[in-house]
Amino acid sequence: MQAGEGVAASLNHFKKDRTFFYGWIVIALSFICLCISFGIRSAIGAFIAPWEEEFLAGRSQVTLVSVLCYITFILFQPVIGRATDQLGARFVLTASILLTGGGLLLSSLATGFWQLIITYGLIASIGMVGGSPVTATAVVARWFEKKQGAVLGLVLSGMSVGQLVMGPLSIFLIENYNWRFTLRVLGIATLLLLPLCFFFIRSRPEDMGLQPYGAEGKKSGMEPGPAMQRASAASHFSVFRNRLFWYLAIPYFVCGLTDVGFIGTHFIPYAEGRGFSAALIAAAFSLIAAFNIGGTIGAGMLSDRFNRARLLMFIYWMRAIIFLLLFTFLDNPAGLIIFAVIYGLTERATIAPTSSLCAHHFKDLSVGMVFGYVSIGHHLGGTLGSYIPGFFYDLTGSYVISLLIFIALLAGSGLIVSRVADSR
Image (tube, rainbow, N blue to C red; front, side, top):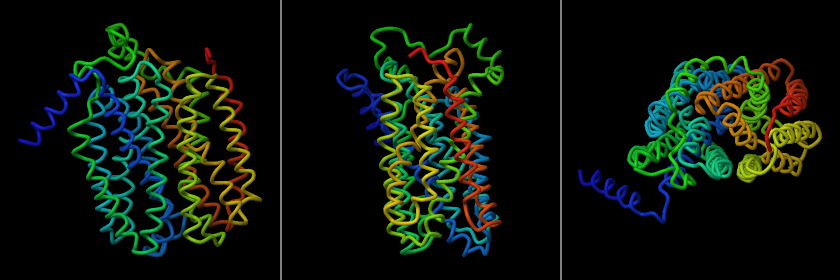
């Protein structure tokens, strides 16, 4: 009772304090949720080799856990988008933390591969969907009218910070202890965030009698009127008939294919296969995450100032070039570091301009819903990007075929996204 009264008193203080905008607390907690969710998800590559040894499985079989993760993202992304719109970010993020932490603890107890598929690939993965850019985009759109691109880039950088922490931490713990201990540590750390989300996150500024940042006395436009509600209901699936939707969704599919799919699942075993030490791989993984932060925040700020379609075109082409250089770069430690730096600048940089273009072109619909549908493409790409390289690896013993496919698709994605109109 005393704890609840203390929280209520703190919220009332922030409500009365006009010198500090409470939305920054919501943004900070959303940032931490993305740290946890994407940090754990990005570290799955560290578990591939231990799971192969533990369960006597091939690489394509072990990556089925990652495949199920992305299938879960595909199925639940629009559900999470709608839940965020209807139930609020507080409910979604709190449930996300509970499922993720609980799923990881159950995964640490798995004695059979099928148990790992259920606990990690399904339960924990459903939780990770909640801590996603879809939820973050809706939070920023409701709490901020001005500087949306910059704030979105800031909160989305939480994914990179999570990768910076969770990837090397997982490699270190597995190297010095084992994969079960590592999952227990990650699960307990995740659950510690649960009371913060429940007590301090508020879904809308109106819940506290506030207005969005930059509203300047105007009535918030985030609550749709009857006409917009009818349009949203009637247009729920009509978005699929809009070519601009596909101009954004198809490149975003390729983005998922190459980042969370290939790099997220196969980069660590790929580097291990080249004979690099665990310390060097952890350093490279950290550099990817560190430069992710700059790329994500920078892309968000640039989205407020420049043509977002051309920015996306540049990002996709830059990634195609760095994948091409993989053939010559990744034969020595310096090459691994160079790849990590350049790739890191592009890995999360697509999110802010893509979500911003979704909000711009489909502003009469639910932001969470539309970006949720676009994100389905990203996670479908992640699904195929996790499994297909493992299949070709078992078949040929290398990733060359996969890399050639990815380079061609990235180059084509730059051309497709350049066709999206942007008033700036």
